[in-house]
Image (cartoon, rainbow, N blue to C red; front, side):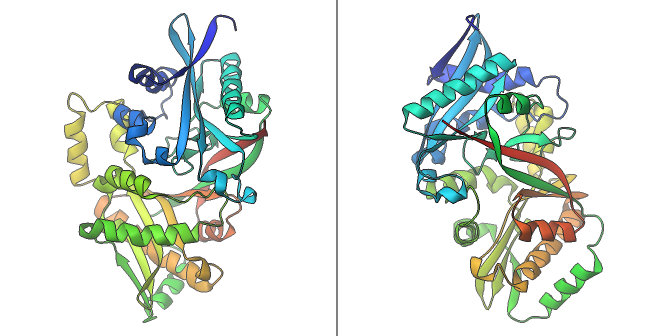
Length: 383
């Protein structure tokens, strides 16, 4: 290991090297989706990522003979430190992520370096990989390497699981995604539940109005922060993060793919669905030049996709133990299913991630004949 050096980085040129490494390591992986390099750089640049308004991170590069052979981030989210310890984070818990390495020895040294930095910041426990916010790409892919991830989901070399566990990490939580065939109508039981809801004058399931983007986003954020507040790993989204997410996702936000459910005129549930942008950016190999921008712009005007992803769904806590919660969920899913098939040509949906102990959402996915297609695992270790 004496020929490998690991150093902290801050300069723009080094951040570019940090982003470039996966393009070499995954060059032969047909299921890896090269991110747009500008987006990947924005993620790790404090001035361009609202998450840094309540978090700090140190990036490290491993080099051998001047060649980058590994990378990792170590980070502390000050909001996560205030969360209840039984929800995964809490006082003294830091994270690491954005992990890639050429071999096991380099990987071990990178993880040890991240741990050392976290100890120096007073952390007593590490969770990883989390890249970098829990709302971005949490967990290591441990099942489902045989097909590409959808938008905002991660991909990793299968060998990383062995390396992380060899470093003394134990599984803490699994995050699941479910695959659905959306060309077929859902089972008769689900159709009856939907029809019953449609007859209920108290219920209204409406499309969002993109022309009132900020107002609609505020409704969704209020429901999200209430609905998810007791979940493992929850950290409330902040206004700077919402602003950044809005800028990034607004081009792929379509009124008929995002629904808000109202009960007696009050917004109580929502469902966000996104066309799988990965299908459009995968051939671009990380660059919008020279003609990638034109191809992407053309796609965004009238996207036709195979897959729709549901990254977020929520029902306010006071309804979560009621039949109304699943009824609203089924109604939103069905309305979006119809739009996905008839307007966008989609044939499959992906719901997730879903926490392995979220029995309510898992039951909904099972009732819709969904099957688990990817499993991500978050690991933990006392420092």
